[in-house]
Image: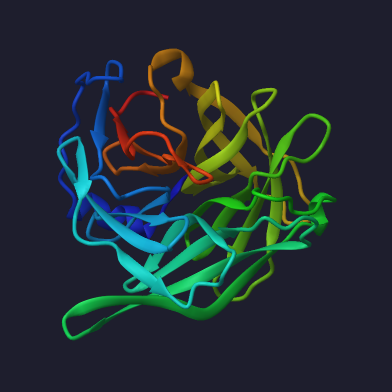
Length: 304
């Protein structure tokens, strides 16, 4: 029996959004493509707050970016909120809404041989009627030791979400000869960190973003993007319920997006809406180079 995430239960009552099966330029049947304003570059992560507002984070010059849904169209809701106190040389790669005024941000650096990855708390307050964001006091550490690997340059916490009081995070590092993604479950109450691996379904893909959907009797149900240039797959995965070691989960391809759609962005954000639609956010920045505008895709709900 699945246990609903309380956040998603609240969203069912708070958000009334109509599904659409339209086709737009660069997309396919059941896909709506939106372009965000110029200047919104290098966005990663995608999360939903209790009011149904989508949030992303900019990787460099780190800021929280609020986005709104109008039907199947995604637009900037209001000005991004710069994050004060962000550490130098650290990129923001993923985002999870923790509750009113609190976010968790997954990080990435260019260093090699890291024993653990960091997730930083970001706190939003209001001063003089304006929102302010700053790095908070909490830092979550995600150890690589259970997987027998270390962190690599430009491979950090690409995937992050909150499910029933615990962060679910994944790295772009791959483990094992058969290629799998390391995943952590980090309780916010300070309980022990649990680890598992999710098998990858391609020869070159890595997890670039995920949404933790629910706990079931068998474990934690995830929806994720596995991608590497020509490989872009929407994957359903399950983390096992075993508590010790780093047991292997399962994964299956839901949609081969590279085969279905043209002009696919570099997807680094994913959010499943309560009505079954899926929102995908593209990162248009590669180093110092920009590759067109920032693109958001909304996939119509479909049986999986």
